[in-house]
Amino acid sequence: MIKTTGGRKLAVTTSHRRALLRNMATSLFHHEKVETTLAKAKELRPFAERIITQAKQGKHYEVRRVISDKLVYKKLFQVIAPRYKERPGGYTRILHLAARGGDNAKRGLISLVS
Image 1: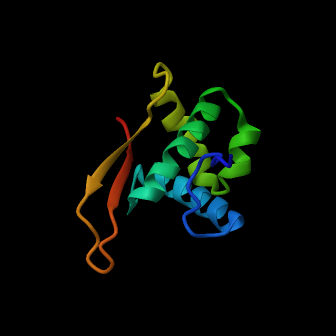
Image 2: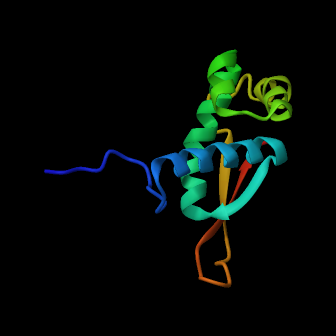
């Protein structure tokens, strides 16, 4: 019996998907919210929360492998990680938005919990 191993393919190749999640996580940490399709937001949530947890634990090397923007990297360790110091998880929230006009795709707003 074939079972899926988890995760959405998002109709792109593995390298494209990896780059997409890295760029979206960088934008999320920079702007603290990102408006995207609901499927991408649901895939971004565990990816971003794992990065925040690693930043809280002081794992600079693991975070640097994912976040290439130096300003966002600094913000992650100096602003975002201390903000969630006492929080055990659940750093992001996803809000459902109205469907996109062009192709009627479901949209969502993923943002950091304050």
